[in-house]
Length: 239
Ligand code: APR
Image (cartoon, rainbow, N blue to C red; front, top):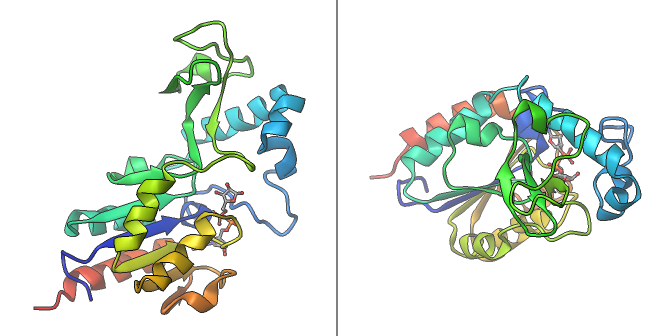
């Protein structure tokens, strides 16, 4: 199954960043860092209380300086170096895949590092000290509008879906790592890949919702399991 020509699509979720010290979403209390998801991760929450939402994301943005990629992120860069064609789709808004060195990477739910202007659609990495305070930031392009987090909130459209669908339709292997399978459309990628004949591999601490669809499931921590699996995949090339 594993050669350089094997076409691979990988979906990662919060679980791959857990060992770097970033909390996953679906903790047993149902809250995200002590907040209700409706309050901090919806366009309605932003309209109702922009300061609360701004402060929430500013804290997440500042946290990026305190965390770093773990062996799970690094293993995926090694796999990408080996393969001719690999697409990594992450639901994570942190920058740990980027910092590990992943290249063909889609942040389907946006990126904490970036801010976006709702007036002129300018998007940019804004991580200087003055971009990270409790004060709102003005758009560097049209200057009269306030920037919002470049995050896909609930009820908004995930990014670059047509590119992802194209890759899913052609992939030989699909791997889902550290995702609970609760949030669509990402949770549906497994079924799409399976339907068109891909070999589907799951790596997760607990069996996710769509567990039954995997051809192969490895239960445990991504940072421990992935380096070993990637080593095996790279070294078991068929003649
Ligand atoms: N290694 C592998 N899996 C892990 C690890 C680990 N070290 N730690 C936790 N997990 C697993 C959990 O068992 C859980 O199944 O990762 C999964 C994380 O699930 P969620 O917290 O639901 O995260 P995710 O699936 O990424 O959420 C999807 O929902 O809130 C929205 O937009 C947000 O992108 C997010 C989306």
